[in-house]
Image (cartoon, rainbow, N blue to C red; front, side, top):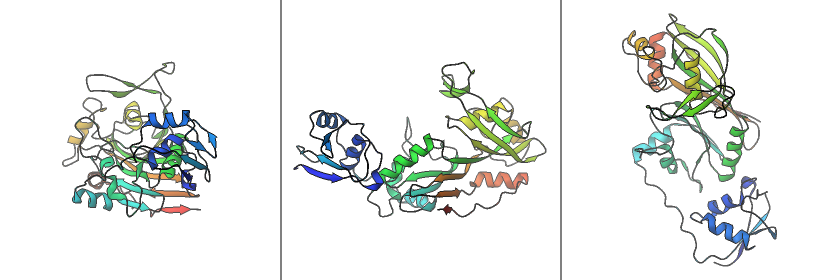
Length: 329
């Protein structure tokens, strides 16, 4: 391979130099990128740079000769039925972003004992694009609803930055055991990760605990069934792991089906009062309002999963159909 020059595209604005190389040359080792920068073989607009240099559109990157071209990552093999199911879950799509209504029980990423997960099936969502979609945030395995994907490398960076900067407005629906008092308000309770017999989990933290991180959730009761079960709208203003699940326990209204965080004799006892009520987790990412990478604001809503629809029907809760996706420029 001879020395070449490549131009940074508009879509690649503000990504790191090392990430740019790994995207254009899959399999290129970080150590090699560092060596090329250190020896001046990689340059941007003729100047020496560090691996963490942020790029701007129109800049010229000098790509040095390499002994052999890096081998592209193979396209993963996906079960055709899984691919069709995932494609049916798409609720919004344009050139830059994809939005899914994530189904119940599908892990977003792999882990110990997990072989079937969304990240391993993203090639099914290329829809003719040269780029594989990228995850920019997460939902728990048993949480359903709006999940955002980036369709290009530059878009992924912008959306991830928007999540870090709290520029996303997230709304969740949950069915909880009990009826919180007061019926609406703000939960401002620090959280921390702890170990234990049930594995690593999230727990409340004292405000002066250095291991704690501030966590804030606004909640509102939308309906209730004999004050034994309630439908809550939850708006997390921070993004801590299992924040909503722990905050609901804190207001004595654990989410129905949440075996990890339920209070003794609450979720199961209330579920048993109503024949046929699902024991699956009743937490759904209903709405996401985000700054669109190309400008304006995108609003997307997701239909309830089947088990929550059945619960709503049994309890007499009436949820409006999700609005069609809207982009305001």
